[in-house]
Amino acid sequence: DAKTTQPTSMDCAEGRAANLPCNHSTISGNEYVYWYRQIHSQGPQYIIHGLKNNETNEMASLIITEDRKSSTLILPHATLRDTAVYYCIVHNAGGTSYGKLTFGQGTILTVHP
Amino acid sequence: KAGVTQTPRYLIKTRGQQVTLSCSPISGHRSVSWYQQTPGQGLQFLFEYFSETQRNKGNFPGRFSGRQFSNSRSEMNVSTLELGDSALYLCASSEDSYNEQFFGPGTRLTVL
Image (cartoon, rainbow over all chains, first blue to last red):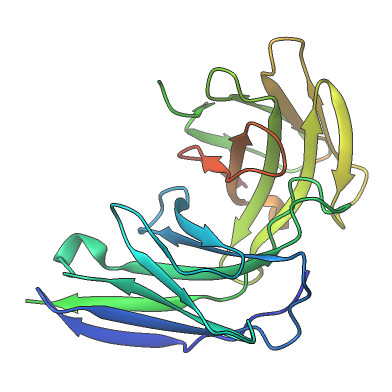
């Protein structure tokens, strides 16, 4: 699976949009971009994933650049409960990496009142 | 649907002992993955089971083993515990490895 690069930490004001970037310049054509988050001492929570098109669900939006070398997770109206570590993961779900998600260090997002 | 459950939630053992952790996946999910999380190494993949077969294994010593039952419930076992095995052990289930994983709350293992 391709490696990802994320900022170590980011801050956001409550009610504002949080935009979390991720670089994955070595991504290959059959690898998806997944986002998970982990609130302190809980299990990671799935947020969203995509291949090449932008995706949106009730939690967030995922914007993937046309060359697929980077992506941005957008939390449209951040709340204090969105404070967590956010992981960007590139994963070839159909290959031999059965069930293996490779977690990096992630981005610590702190939402301030 | 009920989420992924893990038992026990907390466990304290001493060096040399063995431990068995249990994971019940979401109903209908046949893939179960296990991860170890420590402050120093972060989240690391242990192994994945699908339909009672181990399909993938991470870079951990043979003291770490697992199995999956016909109802998709899974257990992992760590033998001859070492202090460095103290960690949060997480399991995650998915319909198959093609799909997103849903994580349980984890089992916090402390080895004294």
